[in-house]
Image (tube, rainbow, N blue to C red; front, side):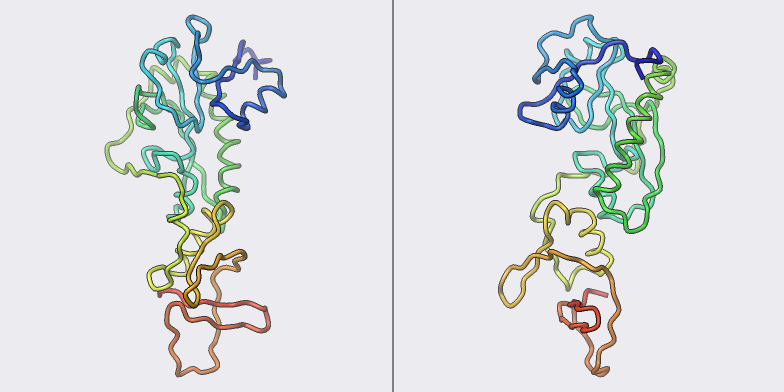
Length: 249
């Protein structure tokens, strides 16, 4: 990008600890600063934050002539907050995207939109897979935005007042499966959303067990056709060596 004259100088600000962006910056010999930055007066035209998680003060934002931009992996105002990709999968969205906004002081994900690109969510996609695709798409969209920044700033638009949703951080409490309350599709989406980070859990004979492997939705014919399965009941499918649990219909 810099070879095309878009970026003349690039420095990185990170939180403390061995975060991936810090390792990347060091490997590529980029100057690294700890948060908060001490002195950026007059040194840069624009700031960029991605999955940063810290509120920015107006005083800092105003040090950049074009303000500070945020690359957010959703179609804002849908899925504001720290975990948009997980909630996109968890709620079965078929379309998502990436949004470039201008940061507003002391607030998350509410600033005016400079650029936005849609992305169709592939069927049976996991949050990790979707996140990787949106990261690449977001990088390309950021370069496109920087190339036409003055024009983007002149035509920025405020976010809609309708359709705003919040994507809170994923937590252990989300991993519980309640067969009587969740359908097969809901559990399938939950597994694809958080299963790689937090194993899904349920109770079995009074004990908590973790779901370590997941086949997905399946249909099994019961030998006793008169016995109506109830949510939580378990059947063993010998041919595939699979335990099938009945979900809410």
